Image 1: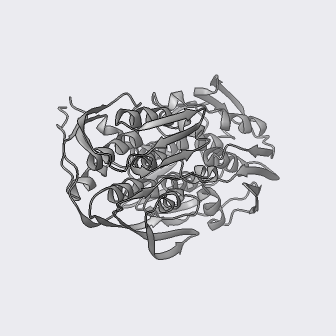
Image 2: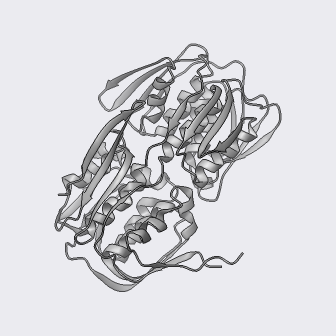
Image 3: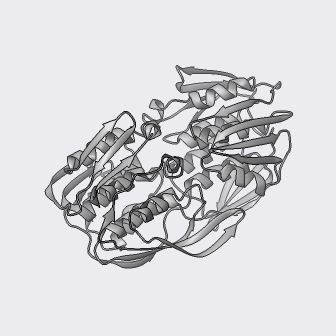
Length: 447
């Protein structure tokens, strides 16, 4: 059975309009919130990736029915106490840290133990960031030294908490907010600024919520025990999925691309701010606001010369999933690019900072590292003609996609393993590349 691809040629110039995968963060949050709303929610353009499919399987195990009709997912919720948790169940979050951590926040009243497991990659990721605050609510949680499997037993005697989240983890913040829905009184959360999709959705659903900005932190107050009604939602395109095509276009000759209807939430567009500071000219057009989220078309064209960047660390949480692909631009920049405090990259699906440094060195880029800070010494005339094999990256979808963009823009003869990893977030990634003219070959699996 074959699960690798071969790329032997750079991509030719292209001018195209494309649509990318639906926003994964919003897809997961909409499924989970619909499962505890009252009534039937209707979600269209839902991302049909492994992570989201695992979320649908999870709510079904918890007694929530859903069906798909004419491209719309209908999810019937029964309110905050609507989960059927009278029996011991095991939930498999697969590769999804978002699903694994957020579902624990929704199971704080479970009557029987719920066991959470995941794949090999997720099992290597620390869950202490959600275990610690959920214990403060009064929930009984056991784990394998803060790693999966995790067992949670809820309580009817939840208490509101005051909590400081200082990592900039949207998953931790969201898990606390979801748990707070079930607790009496007011939960207060001081959270380092990160993705705010959960807050925007809560406001759209009229869940009592107060937010104040204070420097690098948000001060969030949430009043619990307020039921909310079902909702309709059309998921926009994902900026993280767009990032690969943005960089593909920037690094390719005489190319232009328009990426349609993308979520450009201010806390998701760190990549655009970083790349524009490096001499790109990425433009948002046809802007609109949809239920609190900003949506736009993204216009990108090739760039001949990139400037190195001394990247402000306050961009980190707003570009955390995109640094792998940003590093490819730094590899072509004129000068030394500096990135700081990137330890969170090693707590993703794979140790991405370690993998990125090894990858850059493999293609001849000098990198200096001091703890979680790195310097990338750019080569503006970088062009490859050797043979390169990419493997042993814990089947991380973003590492796979980054390697594809490198192969198509830098040249060389590439064998990139674990093609199926893209099913986590972007099943049609290779098909879109081929539609742009990329020459990619692989053998179909023999079943």
